[in-house]
Image (cartoon, rainbow over all chains, first blue to last red; front, side, top):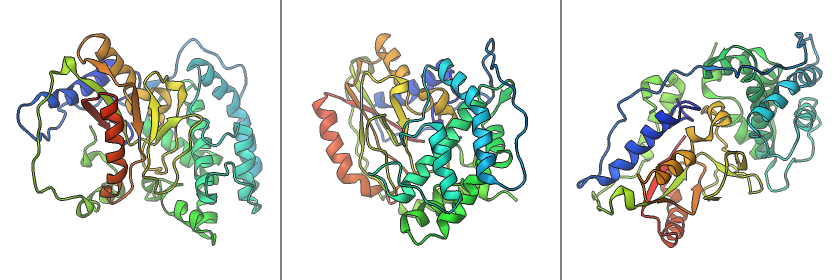
Length: 203
Length: 156
């Protein structure tokens, strides 16, 4: 799977074997060497951590119509899970845009409403800022989802985000907005940086 | 680790169409070096990683970010512009893309000599790959100054 050259998360033994196999190529007397690692990666299934409880109920929230309001509601309901994930992992991977999750939602909602907000970082183009905001919103979702009870796979996470969440639908809508923009930086991210090819190829 | 057969058709096609852009090698240079247990190893990743306070990568970025050797998992964030690879693994364990914990363990166990004082991150996916040459040569000087004599290239 792209994105995981050393195998699955939290499998130190397998990661070490991959690393060691790569480094040992340096000890060959002759080369260059091009060699496959023989073993497949361990199964891509992750059970949510046990012994943790999230003290909030999560009713289904999707309503007809208002994508922005539904997105805000959905994020609000995931907040407790994300807080739990942050506590469990002693941190999280948000931090590129400098926006807290609530601010990320506002930022995305402003784009959806046709009122592009000020860039979240002055050192980025409009397109780059929007792309990083969308990525961070998705990270917020998947970090939260990983804490929910059950067994998760990368495929199930991807299906959940892109096919079942308001945020997935919002990102796809933003892709269309970016594609229609006259700003070249927005057109560029619309083509290749907001929605995965594999998701676009789905019927 | 990643086999073409395991990729979605759209991702596989994208990989294959890059083949004509790859550099042609006219020589087969190879050098031998010290045994692994005496080597100082750095990681150079193309995962678009950087410390939280550093500049995010932007579209087409070919420069690199410096990752201190004492960095911890929560010190790093990912700002790769590509959306076509999994990030959920990195979110749970940075070692799937940037195996610094594993490298430190190899150093602790005496399998390698030491882990470098600094590691580096590019954002991959810029084509043609030869456009990185200037920055790669610059980076090589930093590695030499750090007495690094083995580099692990870690893609995503």
